[in-house]
Image 1 (cartoon, one colour):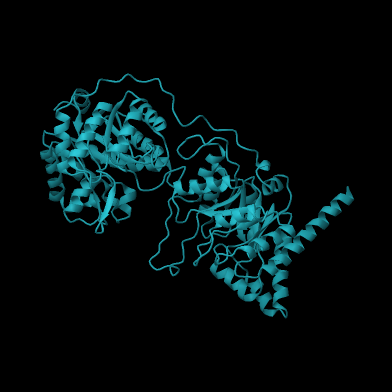
Image 2 (image 1 turned 180 degrees about the vertical axis):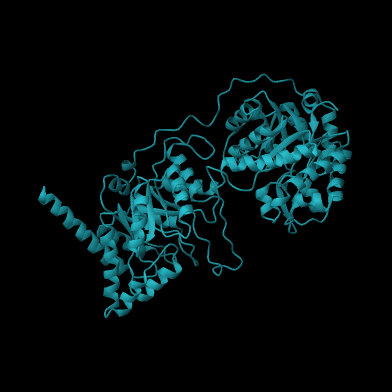
Length: 621
């Protein structure tokens, strides 16, 4: 056979269809590791390949889409990367004989990479190189990098291929109906970037059906003179008696293959739901058409990104930001969403805290059960109806990156400025039967996203107009069991754009003193947590059930010996607060499962002493 690039320049090539759809149809459950079948049921995989060859496919993709160390770890098979990939390539090569090219299929790692996730670009490239090397040893003719939503990850995969092999690369993003990737990167950004990276064929696959993909291919054709590929799903999946089925007919897919070719595609095929019957019709349609005339490389600007906007100065973002920037001792008090529809009492409580001297109130995002307003809704209500500045505690739990971006853009439009960004704790298992917590990204990725909004860009690199004015806070646990890991994560958050740091409630001042220099060395103001405890039982709850809280035995002994437990609890809180004054930039008073009245007493005492200190300074001057 001629080489792949010579062949695709001479005629349009047809790729095979969905390996997963076929294996599922042959009785393999979706929760199986499909890549493992290369070792355990090679004849079954080979049968699928042969069906596609008989249908007229010019390219067979190896059954290795998820055969990287990250995805295989989920099945306890991380040590089988090389075996599954080499075996997958050999099975496809044997089925192809001399009648089809073999493409080494490589999909996303299944984890978020920086700047959104914990996996570094270097780690991602290492994983891709491991897979690429095994596929080369198995005898592939080219590489098919497909179904990528994150341009950064796809470019890492391209670099990994180029570091190992000179074989041709087909690189395909997965896009939504508007043509942008699922993370919001438009064709005007990803197509030129892939062309600059030296990709041989640029394309799109999966996620949408043929009609929406055609518009995307037409848009890409106006941006680049590169070879193009199109592999849509066989329509949108539909639930039919509990099964997800793709209902586009083979004839319909073939009709759109002609349209893809007319738009400039040199490689056509199908993704999810595409069977040998679809490929047979597509191949027949392709044989009746000549490739579209070569397109000159257009001189088109990269769309969607016009450079970052100048960020707003921190002191201009909010009252809390101004106070911290000017070195004022800022006090924030927590208010949580109550159960039910009536929020008047919590609005009044927040106003009371404001009137007693709190710069802002923090609205926590706890994984609570029951019908409660979300933290975003309560924060907006407090800002708009209560006239109270808020700190929106926003966590990554049970939200994906695109959804979080939408939430925060909406919150900004409604007046929210201060945000405390955290990964979040898993929901209690007993709150809802069979419920699980989902984390798409962690606090580092979330901070990077908000920092981009503050530069006037969304996560896909598209300009959003004026830059956002978020005042970005992050959390740190100075009492974490693995302090080195906690510090590393904090520094990543600082690098991502954090502007202030919040700690859990402090009780052990000696332990806190040991880490305070390291906290202040970040150059960011520290808002230390203080718990307005009601008594011994409340202290026991804080120590046992709140992450990051450490209470010395001496404090428990002090509460046990007290004649007036409530008064002694207040004294404990004030002793800690007085020690922290002058050492940190501010305090956050929490009274979780306690009394708002006790929080008011702490706030009153603190603001009175702050006023006395200020008066003494003025008198001295």
